[in-house]
Image (cartoon, rainbow, N blue to C red; front, side, top):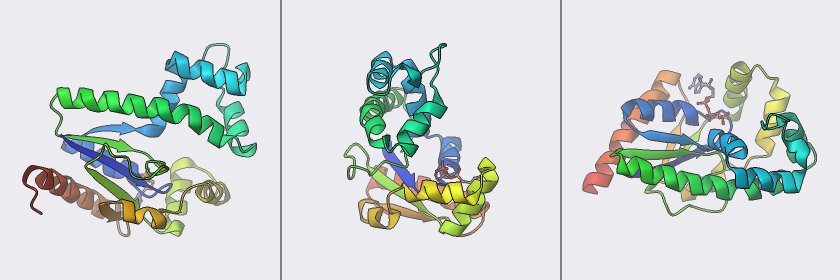
Length: 203
Ligand code: ATP
């Protein structure tokens, strides 16, 4: 099974690429979605979050109080504290899901994560892929997708790592500089290339 990590800035096209790979047979784990569900379902993590952020982090029905946590994390500068709790739980779960996909005979396992390279290159992947696109286009796409103003998106972008600096840690760069159809084609081509490389070692 080929193990792939994919990253890129907000709105660069990571999810679009992963959806194409899923169609071709990959098992994809979206780290953001996984983190959100673990924060509710993983009892150990939930109690750590309550210890650090207080019971107000959860609603009476056990669901996350997203507004409160977002305020604490982003407006009060406590995002690092939250990440320190959530990341180990996500990493552990990703490994479990990877093992399960392998046991089930998947040909490719993918983790999609904006923070994939936060602590350098993780050693569990055969290939690391980065998706890049111009900032102006990303702002336009995301504001259309999320119905949010450009200022908020630009503010979120400022919190992210500079992806140019991360390029040396990556094996493949998918430049999302044309149409959506072109990106999907590039994604399909790269999928086949990675399988071939893994199977034959020949490009
Ligand atoms: P996020 O970091 O916010 O999760 P992402 O990197 O996963 O974003 P996508 O969700 O794949 O990015 O793409 C962002 C939006 O931009 C989507 O609505 C997608 O359809 C659109 N988009 C991506 N690439 C293109 C393109 N080349 N042309 C037009 N629209 C695009």
